[in-house]
Image (cartoon, rainbow, N blue to C red; front, side):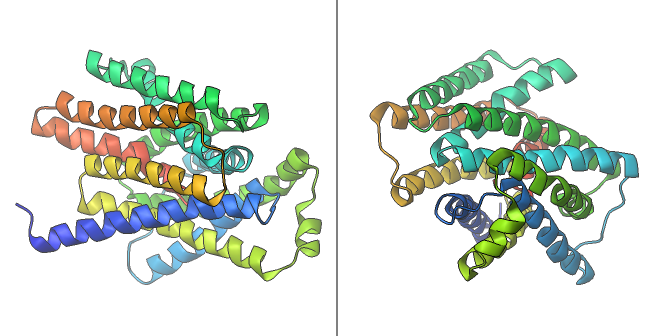
Length: 329
């Protein structure tokens, strides 16, 4: 069995990951909604570049060795990862926090479909039922969310698709190159940050009609600058605590903690941003989150041999690990 120290470390890692993940989502929303920061893609560029700086310092301090990645693969992954991070923030900016979080759960059925198409893996009947239950919850949440809008929905769909694509591709790259999540993130953050800082202000100007450089000159106050830096540091903390959690717990526990994060983020968002509360909308969220928990539970039941459990752990940690990279869970 595990020693007391192991349990203590597992608890510490999970609770710190939950705390940081919940804080960054609500803090990012605060930057968009309360401080009216117009540049979602520019913000993702700042996150990437600050992430690179902190991870470089950690690597120099000997926390982990930098990894080597093929240049062509690196370029492709930067575009996919950069798009996924940018659209994630665009989705958060243009949607309510509740819809943003529940939409993310649609990654589970989408990943199952991609596994079926790419790898020919057919989900079991009970796994399909859990995913249907989850989809029902997502549909009910979406149809009853008063803030649902066309632009936000488009950003949300693209964010989910690019994130799933990123997870699948990143899993393959790390497997083939033998890199850890930290090594992979360090390799990606600088080129992705440069890519995003070049396209970010243009995309943000096109999306909002506001030039980010002029906005920053006019709104050059401490709370904006401090807010941006705090979320950038939190972005790295999400990644590091996610990595620590996966190391100290199994991936199933980490996934269940992910659903606790969802609940906390949604409840706190209703309180902090004074969203109107409608019974059907709350019911939809509860159905979706219970579907996600059922999905994890059935995944465990479907894997019986110890080899399968190892594979499952890898699969489930891939499900959630890359969403956190330098941004949100």
